[in-house]
Length: 129
Image 1: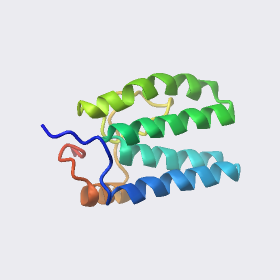
Image 2: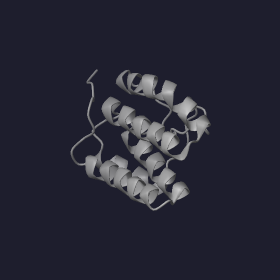
Image 3: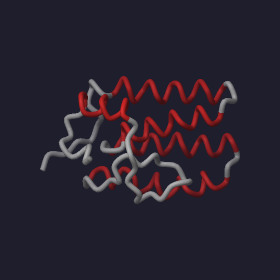
C-alpha cells in the first residue's frame, strides 16, 4: 500500500484557492460563504493527512473567530483524528468536515469538485461512487 501524506501538486492549487476564498469571505463578514469554501477545501484535502488536518485547524479557527461553541467543540476531536483516518485510508468520502455533520457520514461530492478530484488525484481510493 502506497501512502499519500501530502496533496498532489496538481490538486493543491484548488485546495489553496478554496482556503483563500474562505479566508477572504471571513474577513468580509460573509460567514456562510466563507464556511462553504472551508467545506470544499475539506472535501478536496480529506484523503491527505496534512491537508485534512490543516482544514480542521482552519475550521477550529473559524469557530473561535465566530464564537460558535458547537464548532469549536466539534473540531477538536476532528483535528486530532482526521489526519490519522486519512493516513490509514479510512475516510467518509465527501464529508464536509463541520460539526453540523457526523464525522463518519459519507456525502455526495459536488460535481465540479468531483471532476477536479478525479483529474488531479493520484489516490486511487479517493472517490468511491
